[in-house]
Image (cartoon, rainbow, N blue to C red; front, top):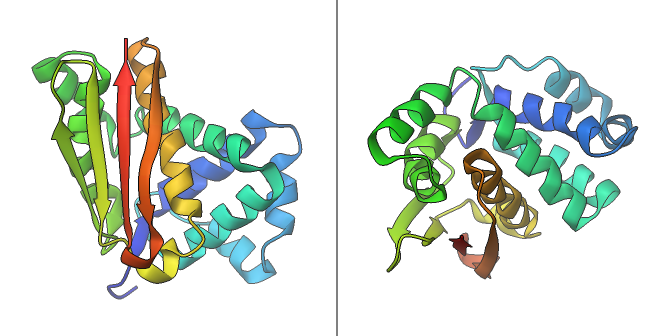
Length: 193
């Protein structure tokens, strides 16, 4: 496959697996929403391979439509908890925890590196340390406008970042403080205790 906006197949594969963890029958309900060719492609995607982001987004749009916003975010939270243990991100997570300690800030700090490994030509995720040790800001910039229009991707990222709290045994919240789909931009405020 040539260059272009893409995501690692493992992300879509893990997302589909997490659908059933959130609600019995959800995976089948979402997959039925997809075009048969797309369904076949996402069900057979190779983990380390690239899947065009448009196809990944079609799965996400169907999941949000079927599950609703909060369950959609929960699917992403569970997806990331699994992904942190997979070969693509586990070395980064383990190394980050050894260097910076086990905290949501460590996961937030590692996010730009992880984003670079799991996505291609899909914008930049930036970590901004906040005053105090119990908050952070993550900013997504230059996300492809055609994929940002519905806001589904921005909403799903709330669930991605919520996984930081469970992974570290902390309680916290993620606020989607700003989203500007027309500019491919979003800002997330994370706080925890």
